[in-house]
Image 1: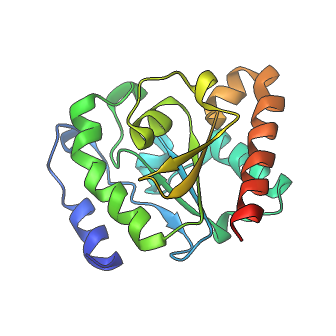
Image 2: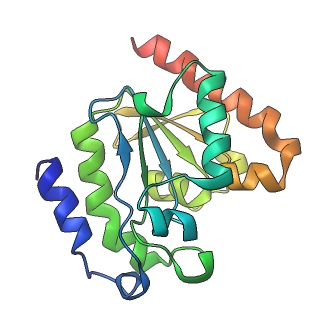
Image 3: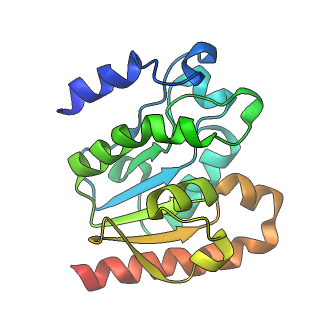
Length: 184
């Protein structure tokens, strides 16, 4: 599937129960050919309303995090593990993650990122096929599909609730930037 076909498939998807409660799907935004791909867990209420990932307070923090390492939101590609909002912002269920897995895999294949930054538990565990906690996954270089370097860090929404973890997230961003320089 090319970009247009993939986006249309996501927009009309009914693979799981999340389709019943969505306002619209949240496909992804950014550069279709980007060195960095940012992956979060799923849309919240504002994302569902606007159809764009990482808007609102968490999105503003993500923009600031990217800016701190010299990146603009428009220069990266941003997507989520699930493309529809879980009700009440609950965690996505395993069947919901599985229903969207092909879509995310295809987005990654189309972007061909040189690095993936996984934000939070669901993104990290889904991309790495593990149940290891984020705290144990961060601070090291993993591989997505045994190829693309993947760095795990805390989700911006978590950092808003736990600002004492921002220094660790900064370390993760510096690791990601350094890893990308190694890959170059």
